[in-house]
Amino acid sequence: MFRAYTPAAYEFPLPEGHRFPYYKYRMMADRLRPLLPVLDTPNLPWAVAGRVHDPHWLRRWRRGEVDRHEVRAFGLPWSEGVVERARRAAGGSVAALDDALRVGWGINLAGGTHHAFADRAEGFCLLNDAALLTRLALDATPDHPGGRVARVAVVDLDVHQGNGTAALLGPLTHVAGPRAFTLSVHGERNYPFRKERSSLDLGLGDGVTDAEYLQVMRGSVLPALEAFRPELLVYLAGVDVLAGDRFGRFALTLAGVRERNRLLLAWARAAGVPLVSLTAGGYNADHALTVEAHASVVLDGLDVYA
Ligand SMILES: [Zn+2]
Image 1 (cartoon, rainbow, N blue to C red):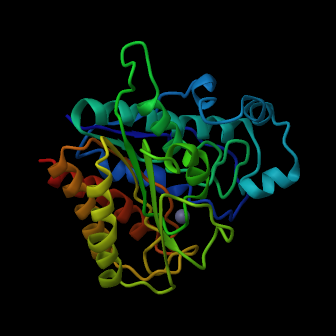
Image 2: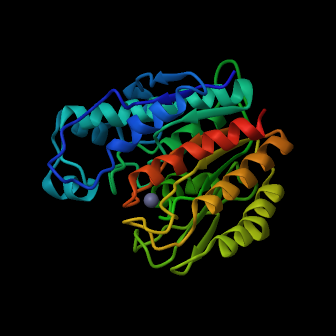
């Protein structure tokens, strides 16, 4: 009944030795294909991307009318392929949202591009899928005048703060009776060095261990979700919290990451809250470990939702 989406078929040119972890998307899809259907991501219409991004800015990216400062902040060279890939990755998240609302759990083997702002690309992120899913779930439609759900929580456990998501969803979170709740557990001294304000920011020091991280999960993350009572949970399951990550400064083990995932998935399952899982970051020197850690969200989810 569950299925996953991957944009791995949509390749784009990268300079030799570039740090973007291209390999992991195809490897994740191959790892999981024996366990559940893995489908190509559908495309995201530009008009849908325009629900959270500035249409003029989108048009410039589409046409390649971007300057070198913008490209440097994005971190990937501009090409038609890289823009198409970003659309496909976000399209997978939208498809996963529909699955989550239908069967309780939706899976994108990409996405979680949380450093994208309304009109600014940063840190390999062009389109902010978590913010987009939140809007798509909350906003009125002809069939659902009150929105498809009343409250959305975005739980961002990538090691980097979800700055774009916090900024994009700020107007829905920093008000009385908030409809969205943004929670970020991240390295306080890590990128982005200028943090935005989430509903709850849990900025941790360097070298965080499994025990310390799981204490934060049990003592802060789950109680915050209990208090907010979301009707949809968007989970950015970044694995750059693992020891040995090139862009992380934490020291979790694979067992710690799996326990983290299980705590969140089991909470959502027990509370009857539909969950969308997005891949987000993971840049371990050990490629097989990166892939196994990303795949473990699905393995653990199949167990929890069995
Ligand atoms: Zn990250």
